[in-house]
Image 1: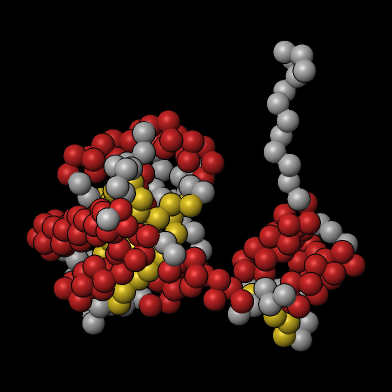
Image 2: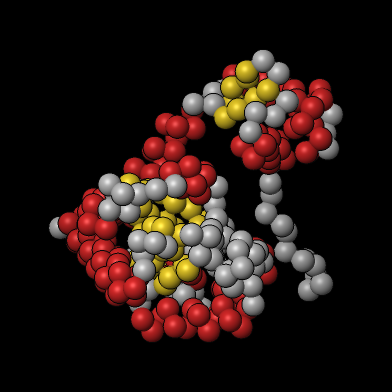
Length: 267
């Protein structure tokens, strides 16, 4: 091979990519028809129908009349994925305890492809906005407008943050959302110094949250924990000191659980 030749690109299986895109379209559109899916993918009805029939037969899709939705096979697969995640095993009980102590929603999250994914949530006695939290759990979220997302971003170096922003942008959710890169980088530096992040109505009006990063046994960030509550309850000292202290303590406990699990496996 000459010096001018570029290295071979990794090979991809087009049929798998197509099936993945179909599943994503079904999830995003919610109960689309064959025509809806074809329009999204710019493909012939015959081709897409074959894929749909196969995905239905394998349990990945379900057909209800003329529309499609995700199949129940994803339920068992997602449970297997979560149960095999070390962060979930180390953090579940601690997140339950955090929700019980704050009486609000507590979340355990990680980063996947530049977005925030919730792998577990626990509902405190006074928690509200259940529908909102369900939607958030179903779709990976941007990192720059949530407390846990900013906590995660704060643990990346500037080059990694820029790469994520180049890919995902700085979408504006509310008037409080940070949409300027310089402001975001300054905020991330503050988060590194104090050990936690806040979301002051940056994702949805009327809601605040506090999040802290969780470091793995290698010292790198592996997730984040957060508490979300209405502004009427997450205010004053509770917003500035009480809940941040509880969230940081919970992150530290999860880190200890991760470390202990590794130690136990090595014995």
